[in-house]
Length: 151
DNA sequence: GCCAACGTTGGC
DNA sequence: GCCAACGTTGGC
Image (tube, rainbow, N blue to C red; front, top):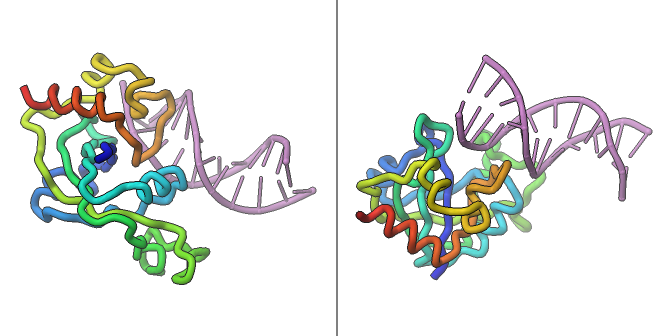
């Protein structure tokens, strides 16, 4: 089982929205590196839920990969902001996963705390200029994050 | 709102 | 294939 980190702007979709909906399709990712990470996910993998572009950015919860290797339907929808006119049904360009709520942390971990607790080598999130919305988290680091979030 | 960092686009 | 211009991300 692998660990991942998924970024979302809470004003768009928050951990509380996921708790309400229980599952969601993680569609709309339009970055090839992030797409490749999405494609290498497996059911049962865990993903940290990260709130970005908010007053206190940070990891706010945990979810699990419910279904994997799904074609992102929004690429075919001309009314979607994620529509990709260069993609085709025969050879879809964008893939995604369905994510299932696991828990919201009683104690969210602000980016500032993560910077104090981890190096940028340990956590890709902390690397300079990182804008990836999907990234892997090393298992040992994931365990430490879980420990910090569960006092 | 600012701005650094990065990815993508498109002319050549 | 280079690279300038542009758009986006996301912390602050």
